[in-house]
Length: 224
Ligand SMILES: O=C(CO)[C@H](O)[C@H](O)COP(=O)(O)O
Image 1 (cartoon, rainbow, N blue to C red):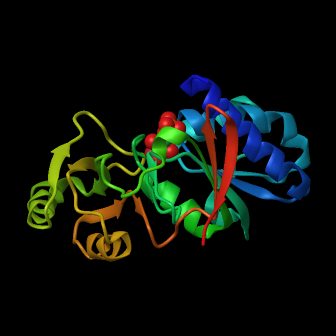
Image 2: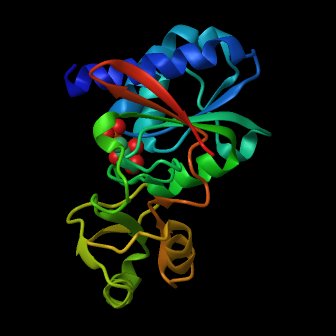
């Protein structure tokens, strides 16, 4: 299976998992990226069976609306039953690195608000230890230099993502060679860095279920 077929296969698997659980008032949180886009396209066929969606980026909101799928502001819904998104890396505990598409902050907010987080990815994303993929962090523009120096002090090698402004008006630093053997502790350390809005490390809120596509089909991994 090529990578595109794998993305399609996990999007289909997540839809098949959700279909019997959806009710007319169910709100589904929607991630960002090429795998999430496959899920959005498939969700179009179920738009009459759900209450609507909450999107993690302007790009996903636009794609959802183009399909006629209702998109709500997170503040206007009481409950997000599911959040479905891709990832850049996942470990066996279903802790993730996300943010390759720059949407990490809104992704983390919608994931935090959701009852159940379904991650969809191809098997190249499963790693023993997180950190081969550079960790994206969203930073307030005026804090760029300060935060970059702090990230170097913590052992990383931050690189400014040129020309990218997030949906929140901030910048992204991609941190190479970051020591992520203790993801929970590092996420907490990053959360305490002034000027750093959010890291793409999803350790405190891992996925609940990972649909992983390989050459032999899709398998499901559960947290814990
Ligand atoms: O975190 C993300 C966007 O911010 C994406 O989920 C991640 O980059 C994976 O993208 P893709 O599905 O295109 O491989």
